[in-house]
Each structure stands twice: as structure tokens, then as C-alpha cells.
Image (cartoon, rainbow, N blue to C red; front, side, top):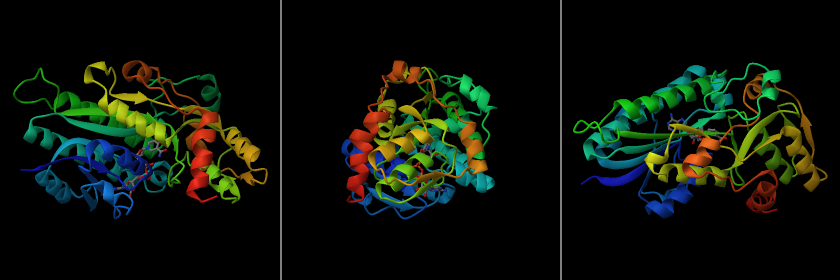
Length: 339
Ligand SMILES: NC(=O)c1ccc[n+]([C@@H]2O[C@H](COP(=O)([O-])OP(=O)(O)OC[C@H]3O[C@@H](n4cnc5c(N)ncnc54)[C@H](O)[C@@H]3O)[C@@H](O)[C@H]2O)c1
């Protein structure tokens, strides 16, 4: 008999770390963790199997398909926004080709065990493309269906994969009865920039905020790559992990959308600087704009409308700007670096 598991791709990443420690309580280690790199030692005790491999490797996915009965897939593996701009074709291969492979795996699994496979897809505010700063300043909270004109390869990949997920949900029905839910139960979230107390991101364009905070706490200087007035939405990693668990456990009948906006708070880069300098008067934070990265964040919204998530599955962030710092980031990062 095949072993019943949930599959997490990109398990070594920032979200993977937090998600696995939360999911292991619920799934009692029935987790298969897949990442390009060897699975981190602190994750390994929490999972049934650690696989170092590529989501583009179809033979590997066939092997996983044969060995396991998969009920849920959390498909986190991706190349992030800044990195994707340097290697757009590789990003397309991984972000789109990889997602297609995982959706196919979900269909094969559902066909073989007769139940829909729940599929979590982390999308991003990078799907939005606001044409000018003037328009960005006029929009208060962007709705899921507005300004979906991404300017980056990463944003294009995410938007297209949202559509692929919707396609797989609608068009791959159970052969026996078309009135039953489809083979793939695709649920997506458009995350803002995420800030963790225990990991530092790399390759993303919202990285300036977490990099600044982690640097200041370690008394390292930080040269911010965007203008001081640059404003985008953020949330803490614990809120992001909780949002994934809540969306995935929401009754399907409550969901009116395939993909939801979600946020904690919005803040400018200089608000982050002021906060860090209010805590560490010696915090050495300067600004040297990287035009390419600046243009990416300028095309992203300053805030998002997450009222559908609130209404459909009761989303509420625990952390806003002030308590994110006081209750989570400052104590968590200090403890992490032993300060
Ligand atoms: N962190 C954020 O602020 C944020 C915001 C919006 C959306 N997201 C999305 O959430 C997901 C996870 O983000 P994260 O911050 O944990 O990213 P991350 O870069 O920390 O982790 C991604 C992981 O995917 C792995 N990976 C890359 N290519 C792979 C491949 N071909 N095969 C197998 N594994 C591969 C990497 O080794 C890495 O461990 C991504 O899809 C990302 O686009 C993240």
C-alpha cells in the first residue's frame, strides 16, 4: 500500500521552514519535503522523507507518484523576483514548468486515489503592474481583479500559474461524476513581502525591509536599495503560515475566489528605518537606489484589499506594524542572533 503524505516543494525556503514546523503537529511527520538543495538538518526530523531534487525532473516526480498517496501539495519552490529578472528563461522554466509538473502530479494522484488533491500556490503582489507612481498614490487598496499587468518575469509567471490552477480545478473532473468537485482543489494566496525573525530572504525585491531589520539588530550598516518613500504591503511569517493553514482548511463551499489578496500592514522604507533608529540609535541605514529593483517595487501596490479573504475564510492578521516589531520581530531576531 502506498504511504499517505502531503508534499511540500521548496521546503528549504523561508516559508517552507515555518510551514513544516506548523504542519508536522497536524500531520505527525507524514510530510515529504522536496528541495533542490539537501533538506536542512533542522527540517529533517519533522518529515517522513527528505528529497534533494528538481521539480523539473519528471522521473523524480514519477517516482514520488508511484511511492506515495498524496492528499495535499504545498508548492513553494520558485525563483523569486530579483533573481528571476537576472535569469528570466530559467525562472519561466522553474516557476511555470515546475508548477505545471506539480499540477499534473496532483491530477494523477487524484485519479488514482479517487479524492481531490488540495493544492496550495503562493502567488504574490508581483502579479500587479501599476503604470506610474502617480496612479500608485491614487489607489488606496488594490482589488484582486485590478491592474493585473505584471512588469516582471516573476509576476508574469505567478499570474499565469494562478490561471493554470483555475484551469486544472475546472477542467479535470472526476470521470465518474461531473457534479463532484474536480480532481485538483487549487487555492492560491497573493502574499505581500514577508518578514521572518529567523530567516533572511534572498532574491526577492521586498527584501529591503527584512534585510534592514536584521542588519540593525546585528549592529551592521545597511544600504537600502529603494527610495525612502517606497511603500508596499508586508506581513510577518507567522501570520503568513497561519493564513496558509486557514485557507487550506476552509470549507470549499465558502471560497468565492481561486486566489486571495492578503496583508498585515503597509509601510514605507523610511518608516522601517525610523523604527529601527528609535530602538537602536546607532543604526546606520542609508539609501542608494538600484533603479531596476526600484522600478519593480514602484509597479507593486502600496496596499491590497483583502476583504474577500476576511469574508470567505475569516482572515485577520495578528500583527500590524507596531506589534509586529514589539511582539515578534525585535524579540525573535534578538533571540535568533543571541543578542
Ligand atoms: N517570501 C516572500 O516574501 C514571498 C512573497 C510572495 C510569494 N512568495 C512565494 O512563496 C514561495 C516560497 O517563498 P520563499 O520565500 O520560501 O522562497 P525561498 O527562495 O526562500 O525558497 C524557495 C525554495 O525553492 C527551492 N527551489 C528553487 N528551484 C527549485 C527547483 N527547480 N526544484 C526544487 N526546489 C527548488 C529553493 O532551493 C528554495 O529553497 C515562492 O513560490 C515565492 O514566490 C514568497
